[in-house]
Image (tube, rainbow, N blue to C red; front, top):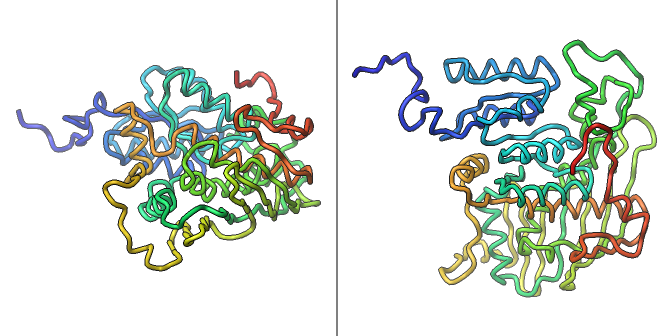
Length: 407
């Protein structure tokens, strides 16, 4: 039979909808919009749902997806609960403001979906641990949005460290951009086509202002985020965790430092910080902002400095060495988003599963608590809690506005 050429290729054969992962997106502003457009073109993937509290965003991205596919394959939603009730969705990409990350992922996992969650993981360690346990309980595939794990030079840098090429590890140093300051505190009317109450979700009620629900507002207001100590720090901290073994041993057990917080305007997360600490194995830890997106491993025989765009070693000859067949070779992902889709199909772990996301996000939370309290923080990885400081321990949990809950 002759097939009319006007039928899109993805409607027939191996790329037919029945053979593809049905993907939905929650949050399609800025970063989320870019993810939606990227996932729409992945192999074995079809975007079938778009959810956002801004009507203009959800409608424009839904229309764009349908134009790419040449038909009405994607549906727009205001409320994520309605979209998650569908039983024909396999995976969900979550790129909401940070305070919604775990809640949306938790609901998705409970409804039988796999989840790709943008960094950072959440606004409290209690939520992180709840999501981790839910992913294990429901057998959900999880991918963390720290895409540097799918970069060849970063994998190689961590292989150099893990295979002892720099000798015994003495210190790990991490640099990250920091939060901005400013933001209007003047209440104004909520724009038409925007469900502000749903955008707030589990966060406290607050008057709408022109800067509150922008990218900066959702990044730099503590009701919705920890700021870039987590929002950007997630990237170089994840590299540090990968280079140290992807276990609780890769998370420092002591934290002490100071930070600067804005005293005017809407934004109130740290605009600079210096945190020093210790790993259980004895190595030193240093986390600073503002700075570049950089992770530095120093051993007694050499050094590895790696960022998103570069790799430097001491001695320089380390860059030319090969990892031998008998040495440790780390998980190789050639494309971060495709890795998630492929793992949904195979049910194998992704390059950055939920346990690892918890480790790197824990460092952000514990660093933030240290600079906010001005005291040394002691972390017990076995008990997964802060010890010796009741006030600091309580800061690991954050109340959610009803009716929202992670339980």
